[in-house]
Image (cartoon, rainbow, N blue to C red; front, top):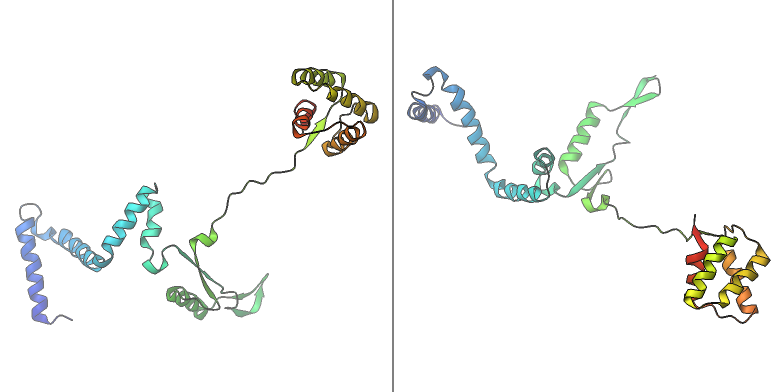
Length: 228
């Protein structure tokens, strides 16, 4: 605490600055409109001096991320020990029962409960009711879920004509006879179960001694298979 002499000296010092700087700019009676706000600002500047460089560095990082001034407000206000962390408080057991239910409501937070929550938040330590997690714990992974290939097979005359032309071009004429045999056995379709169609193809190929490497299977799929 300042004694009376120190206080008077400081007041005189401040108002002398006002006389030197604000004279002919403001009326003397309006000095307080400038001096008092500037005194508060200087006081805040002195209090925040220790964290100033860290805050400026954080501000530069947030600027690089493209955050607006409103979006930066929260992270910049957050205390250093809370940066990049999330605190969850389980206050479900902190309540008092009401003497009389209010509809479905039968309990409420008392003043003591509210103070308990505030103190738990400010303490920022892990307890049975307070858990602290890094921000990464609430992130998510983007993954691609691939469903099984779902094809329908059409053995109509038009489809077989296209298949015949493709087989001639690829010099895979044995597949033409295979397709006609499957047609005679299973019908024109459309066949909605591609795996069942492949089983019929493989059975026919085994029965007639026809090899079915990946190249031939791909030709069957690309010409006769139709995504659904």
